[in-house]
Amino acid sequence: MKSSPTESTDEIESGEAAGLRSVKVWDLFVRVFHWLLVITFATAWYTGGIWDQPHLAAGYLVLALVLARIVWGFVGSRYALFSAFVYRPRVIVRYMAEMLRMRTPRYLGHNPAGGAMVIALLAILLVLCITGIMMTTDAFWGVEWVDNLHATASNIALVLVALHVGGVVFASVEHGENLVRAMITGIKRSR
Image 1 (cartoon, helix red, strand yellow):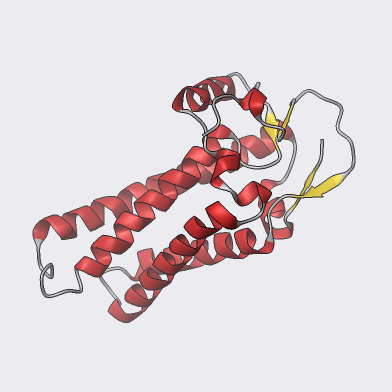
Image 2 (spheres, rainbow, N blue to C red):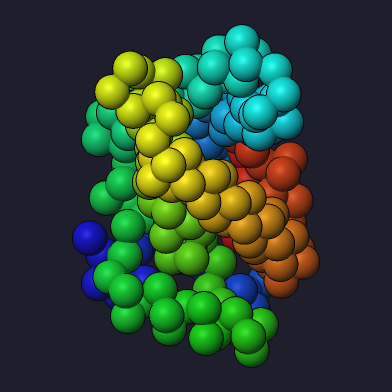
């Protein structure tokens, strides 16, 4: 767990003159995972309560993706590793305070707020998947607290997704780069 953004070699000051070099940041696994997760989560959310088979299939695929991403967080490429973007809470809070002033440092990988969002999303998706699986078993089918937890986790996931998209837009504007394109190509400018 990183204690300070100054310990990160990935940090680039936001006011520096921009060079035109580019660097590969997001590997193919991270990019495919990200966009498949967008599609499968949207499918699971849309079909929930109205179309059981696609909902279940999408939910199982979300679980497989999340588990694969957790493994990749320990064995993957440089910017995919949890050790590259999990920061102490005080660093995250300090970074978010700087966001309000539009003075955050630029990171090649996930910034502290983005790293926290990755962890939050993975955690809530695990809760969603586990409660969804529980609801298909004889032991938990029709159990009110499981159904309520699943519905609550779904709502929390939607809020987190909205915050994630907002953060991507905010960081793209603040640092003058298209982060959506970077998640498609894997490439960001080095400065």
